[in-house]
Length: 342
Image 1 (cartoon, helix red, strand yellow):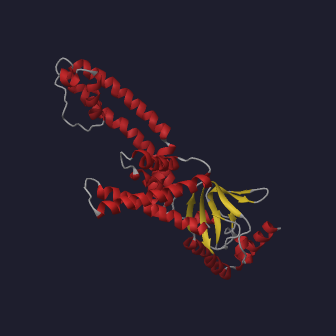
Image 2 (cartoon, helix red, strand yellow):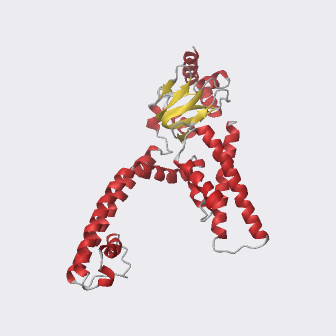
Image 3 (cartoon, helix red, strand yellow):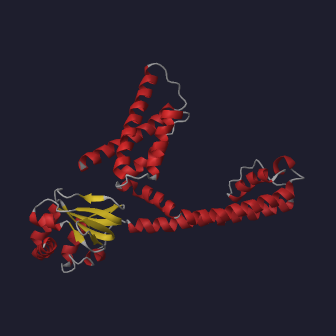
């Protein structure tokens, strides 16, 4: 079932990308005959599949997320209005599906950073809007008699204010009075400073998130893990080359009870929950998945992400190679597996 979901989600992701490309290619072109029929059939089949997928997500997630709301809006537009082609908005769903790909890590991290910093960004934009309003009123009073057609009212003056504060400077509207030019010059410098604020907020938060999700694992980080703390530096270096870092969002299922034990997982940051009675919460420095590897059995419990987590995955083959070379590692894992199974 889990394998089917993965391939089905990938299929939906590729279908969304095909729909976006299709929308781009047919825009501005008049299709006739067979081409129009093929195009309409592709859209109809795609929307039918999207409806099926949306129904599955509603029953599975049992809640309405922002992405699901966007998907339903696109589907509803096609079924009931179809005035504009909104399929391009589903590109965010494709980002979500392929979020585990390393090439999309910066993109998804940036989107999450913007959402997390939305209040800070909104605060700076309120300040910018206030300055825009003040500047537009002042330039209106200075230029309304000289250029009534462009500065005759405050709303018209705001067009010039926006172009000046953002330093775009279209040149279609310019002040002619000396004082107006002087104030406009100050507004340009002020605009650079004010729009640098949200950029700085986003840059610092984005850098922090990227560093947190950095896929390079330091030797120091490995030595702080209790399982590897007693191993020689040669073993630590070897382990470092075999670890696969993975970042997972909250509520993500890592593996289910009954799955084949194929890897050991170490938590660098975040927390996971072992689905047993009562549930057990594991945090930074803890590891799990060793029981099935040691006993060569299936997973004896499901484990899901409690809060966003970065895991260091060590495959079964790599672990066996390390245990053969460093028997003490096997003893520690065997003792841990025995204590957890009682």
